Length: 90
Image (cartoon, rainbow, N blue to C red; front, top):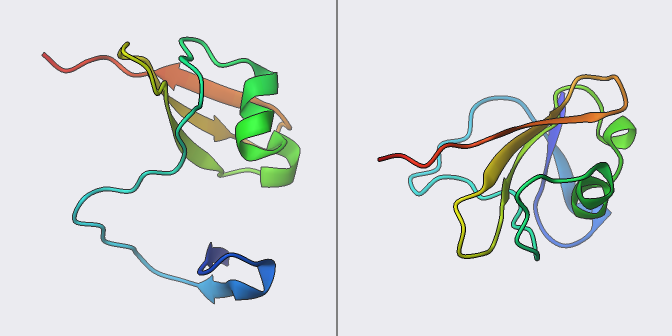
């Protein structure tokens, strides 16, 4: 079972099973730096360790700059982060 946090504290975490519909999309994380290639240290700062997040963790990193770099980030249970860079749609 996964968890969805509603509110600002850990006590506001409730069990959830099912699908989430978001008309305007879901924004999971925006970097505070213009990130072209995220480092392990930057991803740990943004999300915590991959081992803590566990297998199946997935997020989007937006470079928060004038460039077009965005990355899909995930973990597989290996204790490491993986990412793939997005390509700007023409």
